[in-house]
Image 1 (cartoon, one colour):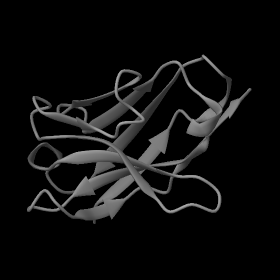
Image 2 (cartoon, helix red, strand yellow):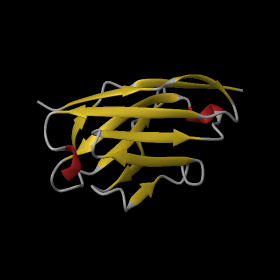
Image 3 (cartoon, one colour):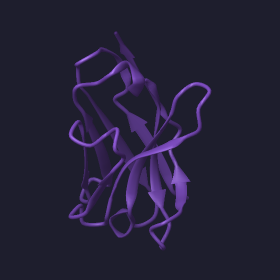
Image 4 (cartoon, rainbow, N blue to C red):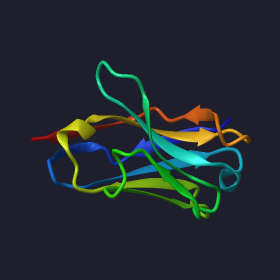
Length: 119
């Protein structure tokens, strides 16, 4: 059974930084596309960033470009999201996601970690 466990969320002032991490157990981590999504209160879950199995290709939502960096360590089965210059609108629950073999559909979700950015 694949399990994803996020950490690193918290409360930060606008302009600050946070680093989220997600450790994956079960399965073969290095084979799959990994990503981060977020869901703000009253809104639908939205894509934030993703990267391919090697980390050589990354994809970002427009809101994340230039401020967030996704990375992975296949040896540690970990994917991270470095978030800089945070804004109050970044406040959300952030979810780690492992895509399925097609690379286009999420197969597994983490439980989420809260990020709150105060103005």
